[in-house]
Image (tube, rainbow, N blue to C red; front, side, top):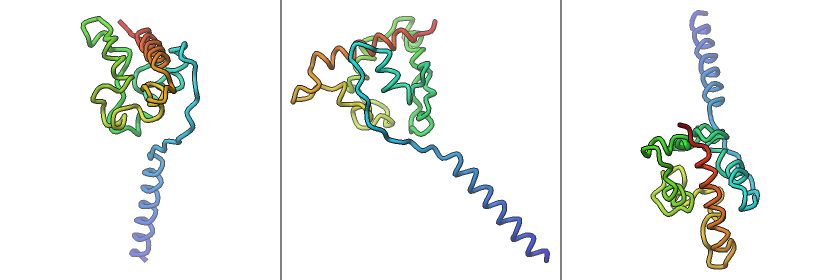
Length: 146
């Protein structure tokens, strides 16, 4: 009888442990990319960046837990750069011309890379790519905290 209770207790523990572990698993749902106008840095951020970087830019978006490298706190970029917003660095990171953390994939942000890279077919055009990156960079600059 004692052995039966022990087996039952161990089984309940294992079931509870499995449920807790499964509940902590982060599942990222892939959805089609929504096209957002190049003139709105705020709309582009909300649609392309907030899922990882968070609505407030602090790196606490809903998908952040699933990344191998935590997204940086975008509100502290100027503070970490002696009070000067590193505009050219942010532009370069968005464009994918730097060694990004492995969370971003090879050389681009995986969800929306084609919006921020020039393509040989002209879609998006070089001017639109620059406009998108510039407006998104300006929006990230507006997130800076003192």
